[in-house]
Image (tube, rainbow, N blue to C red; front, side, top):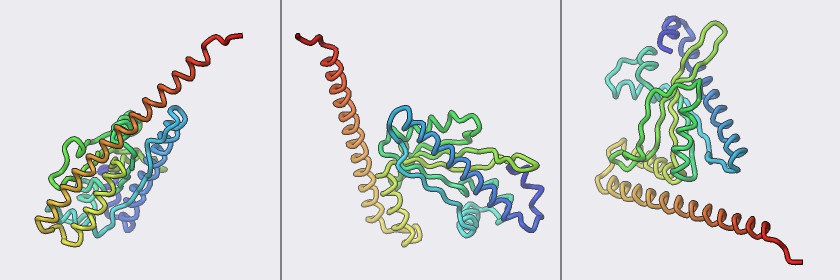
Length: 227
């Protein structure tokens, strides 16, 4: 993407051009995810994705991130150092769905996985849990192909609930919340983890029970009838 965009740095509409690329990348990735979800429903009669959320980072957020990381505000630095300008969030029912989806996304031949951050196995100090994949997707223009980065976050409903509230709370304190609030948020994160584990175990028990019932039904149908 960097090489293709360098031709446009002096263009009047360079910002619009880059935002167009990121918007197009979101559409490409979003369509792929919807197809994967539909295929999973067709094969397994089950949808691993509860919700798909997409967003483009605002100019203010991009500038703030560049300054925080010590970079000058420029389009080149934006493209090179800000990896989450285009973001997709997948909300799943169970933690097992997260790794299934990550595997399915990684197997897409026209998506390149650039990096993975597993904050589920290795949560942040705050208690934050999520699975992050940075991918690049080719955007086919009239005269070129531009590989564009998209960050994909995969998390359960419970993880998303916690992360949304944690963000709102810290936003009010500008990232400097009192220690007791940070401590209570970590305790809530532990509760969320326990809830996810319980719900996964319950779902597995239900599936096992349904499987046993189906086997019993088949056995009953195969038994010879008196008569």
